Image (tube, rainbow, N blue to C red; front, side, top):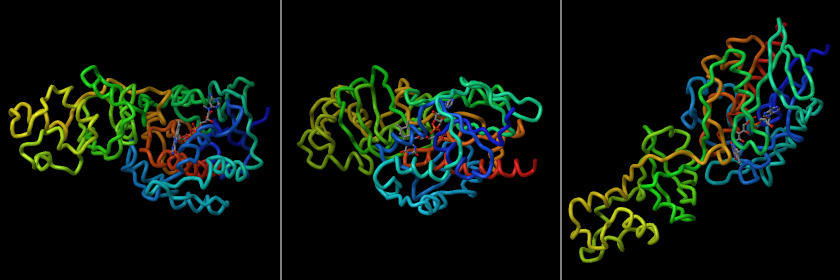
Length: 385
Ligand SMILES: Cc1cc2nc3c(=O)[nH]c(=O)nc-3n(C[C@H](O)[C@H](O)[C@H](O)COP(=O)(O)OP(=O)(O)OC[C@H]3O[C@@H](n4cnc5c(N)ncnc54)[C@H](O)[C@@H]3O)c2cc1C
């Protein structure tokens, strides 16, 4: 019976990064797709938003101390140096975001080159993991594999059409780990009937400020057939579970200062696309009259342009979500090694863990940082054997 040093479950961003750092061991990667890193290939509009110039746990949903500990070991600067050392010079776009110079495949090629020699078994679906005395038995569609240690890097549930699965959560739970309920995140939000007026604006994009819980987020909101989307709404979905969000359609502007011409109708003085203003007035049954002629109730309704509060109905779901929030609870993982505190020899990295970032390269940064820490932890564990 062959016993591997490490079985890596999933040849995605995290799994490949671990392989890169552990080449001297007897590793095997199990992957159910016919090729590696399907998500990297389609990410960032095909150019992969790898990381960000600005990194802090505040861009993440999850335990801030846990995240900070992982980033102390390997942060955005370390990632950029790693990529540069291996010949990939990321370029900055959209302000502070790092992308591949031309296409996401460059990053996949780099990961495959730096992990060259590590065997990847494709079209092999991982079905379960058991600990039998001192080693692990991993059951797959191609038979049973044995190893001293196992790394779960199978990601989350978003985009099942390219191989995403919840197997990591199932395995972790079967081995005694607590799972924070997974939910789609970085995803559009659907609307209640009262907000259906927004659907008629499909295709329109506006800069807005959104308040969700104690967070305030600014950016572009896109009206869509199914509801609302765009970068600021995708980030909102990270922090939204249920209940109301509030949208300021005129960020940085004071409402009263808009109505300087007393005889002009309020509608014509609002500096927003006509289509939006008309739909807003119709939905709130506001008359097309001058501001000063409005009743107090009408002025109050008009002020909702600055604070339109409503409860979204739900999200566009896992088929559209860039990530899955929730996952393996971090209080049962050691942030210095990414090893399970419950099962010796079991390690986690990437999206399967209950850490989820905003848009901007934060999820790949997490996948790579947690992978490097897991590689260090695995190395320690194997050298102590
Ligand atoms: C459309 C889209 C665009 C995105 N763009 C960005 C971006 O630009 N920047 C950013 O930071 N993040 C982006 N993300 C998020 C990012 O892709 C993920 O957070 C990241 O890939 C997580 O890495 P991971 O290694 O944990 O999981 P994954 O990369 O998902 O890898 C998991 C691997 O496990 C395999 N697997 C799953 N189940 C099984 C099983 N049962 N048996 C065997 N193998 C299995 C999968 O096939 C996959 O290869 C995007 C996501 C999507 C869907």
